[in-house]
Structure formats: C-alpha cells, structure tokens
Image (cartoon, rainbow, N blue to C red; front, top):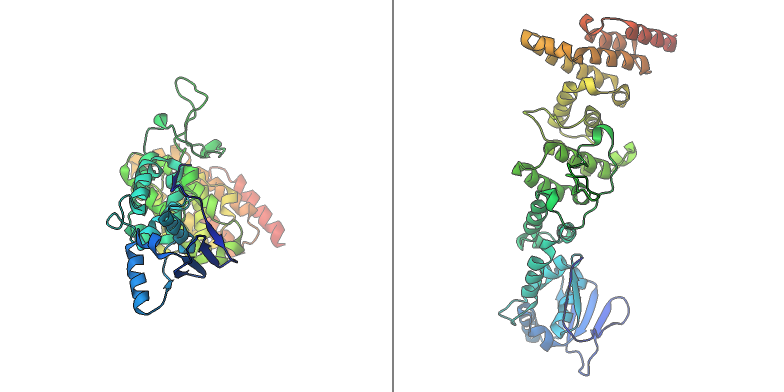
Length: 420
C-alpha cells in the first residue's frame, strides 16, 4: 500500500477523555471547535493560515463574542478534521488509501486551497492521488470502497469516477503486462473453469484472465455495477470472464439461507436485478451462464420479490438451457414453476421444429431427448406432486422425446408407492 507523510513536527495532540482533544502548546487555546461529538481546543493562527472556511467561521464567532465554533456537517467526521488540523500545525500525518477520501473531502470543506497557502493540503493530496493511489490496483479498489460513505462529496470531487477509470483501465490491460499485486485464491474446476492457465511456453506465474474478479467483488453492488458496465461496454473483455465475475459476486454476497435472504429482501432484490441486467447475452439469451446458476438466480428472485420482468427473463433463459439442468437444480423450485419452464421450452422447441432446417439439428444434438429424460427423472424424485400435476407435467413431453419409456415407468412406480 502506498502512503504519504506530511509535516515534520511531533504530534502533540492529546486526549482528555474520549470526546475532548487539545493541542499541547506554551500558548493557551484560543478557539474551541465541536466536530460531531468531539471537542477540539486549538489555536486560531495555524488554522486560519491554511483554511479559508476557518477564517470565516472565526470572524463569525468573534462577531457573536465567542470562541466556540460548531461544525455539524464535516465530511469524514472528527477523524478527518483532526488530520487536517494537524497538517495546519505542521505535525506529521500519514495519508493512505483508507483515509485519503475522507481527508480530501474534509480539506475541500475547510477550503484548504492554494489561495489560502501555497502547497496546501488539497494540492498535496491531488499530487498523491495522481502519482500514487490511482497507479495502484489495490489502492484504487480500497479508495473506491471508501467513497460510498462520503457521498455526495466524493462524487462531486470526481473521486468516484477517477477510481472507476483507474480500476476499469487496469482490468482491460493485457494480462501478460500486469506487474501489480492482486488477489486470486479461487479454485475453479469443470464447467466453471472459464480461463486457461497454460500458454505455449509454460510459466510458473501465469496471470489468469479473471485475475481481477476477487478484488472487484469486494465492492458494494452499486460500485460493482458501475465498474462492470464500463468493462462490458468496452467490448474488450471476454464474456465468459464477465459471467464468471457475476457468478462469483452472487456467491460472495448472497446468503445461502432462506431466512437471511428474506430478512434483507430489499438489498438482495437490488443485487439480483443488477446481476441479471449485467449478464452478457447474445440477443436476449444469457449464453455464458449455466442453467444451474440461472435456476438459483430465479429461486432467489422469487424469494426476494424481484421485478416481474426479471423473473420472466430468467424463466425464458432457463428454458433455453433446460437440457443442461440436473434434477437437483429443478428440485429447488415449486412444481408449478417447473411446469412453466417446461411449457416455455416446448413452445420454443415447437417454433424451431416448424422449420425443417433446424429440426434435424435440435434432435441430432439430443436436446429434446435430454429434456425428456430430465423431466422423467424429476417426476421420479419430486415427492410433493399431486396426481393432476404429475399427469400434466408428464404430458408436456412429446412422444418424440421418449423413444423408450423406462424413465416414465420408473416415475409412475415411485409416485404410486408414495401415494399408496
């Protein structure tokens, strides 16, 4: 992590209890400043020499014959104010990715500009941001995380968009040119492994295409959406990697228990709707997401009351990939929804089959046969079916999807044992 030290004098701020601080000096304090719950006993000259706002506040206080100033709307609160005050005294302060947003906003509030004093705090912070923070991957991510609690200041000062530019620009570079530190601990296997870890010349430290996913997934959903929108719109990122980032974000932030999902329904609803919006597509089809993942998203969208168009979108896309689903995937849903998905699949299959150019392709790839086997297996495993729902769902599958009826016979046998 990059940092910058300012000032050279020893830190002589001391505390008298939790909510009172004062600057130790041979001179008595001549101004008292309340910032939130904390009271600072300070000296006018250091503050007035670097802060235009403090000049005005002191004048206003003098006109009211008092040395007490109250600041209720300090961005960054008393901690940011304290750093700014120490800078005014020339005391050593350390700026880093965790506190620089708050201090930059506080310095703006206090108007610590060049017309107050040359080489003032705002100028020094801007130099550090441009020469250090925004050149660092980790620091840019950290600063972006801190901007949310300081809105609208951080937005007005362009800190948010500058962090976005820094992060998205680094995501889009050629992985072979990356020299900075990043997090990548995920172990992918099977169908979830969407990046290649080999090159023509095998190297020990091969940088995967999704090297950035873990770090970006630490952002809150609104910041994450903005970064991913920039990455998507660039057209330079592999859609499979984007889909993997969204899958990982869902795994990172959505709770697994139904109680936790519904307890924070509003935030989880926003998350699901945002992820569905960001999923890469070919036309309307979510071609880069597995059916299993889409079915889980559909389950959550129903639980948290996502917008109806989002649920319809997911149902449509699940039906397009239904041949990839497993019985386990379907069992997380009510039978009525499974019926709806199969009905959608059959409607789509019928439209395709009406064109002889596609009929042979669909059947040749076994899509219809796979769905037939899937539904028969589902009927055999679903324990809460009524007779009418069993019959209706089984009849959705046409004869052409059941060249043999072993699966259906097994389902009937299981159903009869459960019912009798």
